[in-house]
Image: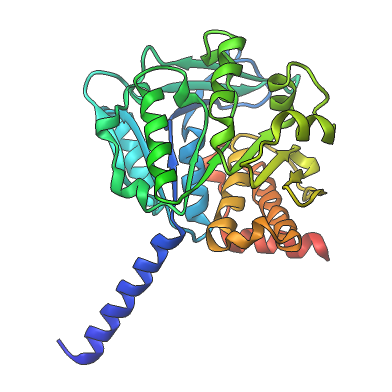
Length: 343
């Protein structure tokens, strides 16, 4: 092998190693969403369903990768056709799936999801139990978690044991390794035994997060009915001393942000919405991708506002297509939308 070939290979190695310095590891559920083939109907009225890969943490992992970032997914699926399909989808999207595990007894989770004509989303879940709920601590890829610049998770993995304890153990590993902990509760009430259980568990890990993203509905739920638009409510009830950034997503209206030093709002990017599935996950992936490259965003308001406008554009592009993973945007698409919205 000539010197040029050797130096070329070394260059490649350097680039690959550098990528892990911006690695976003997403922990939790990956499942199959079944979406009606026509819009605006209830699940009972749907004439047929189309299968789509889903699960918020997996959506975020794909979202980061689509933007050119480095991401990995840690979770469990069934050792069945759907589970194998999901592992392959991650691979095709350049997401490291080495932290995925396959359960021989439980099936991959299924969710039937629709956006009814009245604008309400309807969910029907098949998890009795599903493989994602059965991930154990001994199955965690600790080395992968320790490489995370950002460790991202939701709250669905807190619903049942053994996954709940595994989730807490994974957070502990990431924190000890110096990862930034990112939390999107992603409330799905039908999955919880009760509202009280949901509120208690979601808040049980609240003060461990460095970055939290919540929606207006989640503010109302977590505060027991308080005004989700009040800065005072957010700062007094949801901001905690360890938090570096709290973001409230407001769909097409953009988002609000809160840090210890500053707070404000960044407007949304106007598009024609077709399907809102995955918009919040695309927003999170846009924000985390920016953060993984530059943690000074957390203390520089101008940079943070730019990153949040970028995240808003990621969410906006996703609502122009059906499904979550198929609609996750590329860097070029986001920059194009931002350019056209400014002109």
